[in-house]
Image (tube, rainbow, N blue to C red; front, side, top):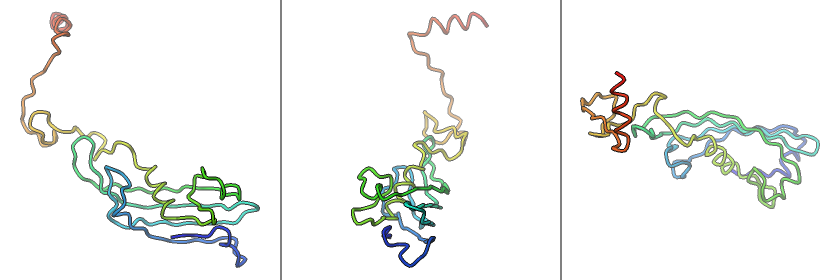
Length: 167
């Protein structure tokens, strides 16, 4: 969806709200998160004196892969981001919002940009996820019964012997 910021308020409006949905199922938003359901977005624009206030609200559900146990789980993302756009921002190539030379805001690109910033670098299915058993590869929560021998680096054996002597 493209929004022309130069003439959005030409009809005497001082505020405008757009409720939009975007399909990111074919987009590579994150390696660990896939957005199969539509991403709901509300764009609120308010004309100020010499600037435009933009409030972007995003609600999305992603299917994620746990970094420790590799289970798939759903994670909700809900956030609001605010921007102030001045005429100088419309010509700035380093502007934080995707506006082209004709003052057209690409809302889908803005949502994609902000959504990718909200995704954590490491996602866990739950905070205390124990991960996978290093012996059989099954989730540790399944109590696989593997007996893990305690490996000690041979260079540290002397320290282990000292600890064993204290007991």
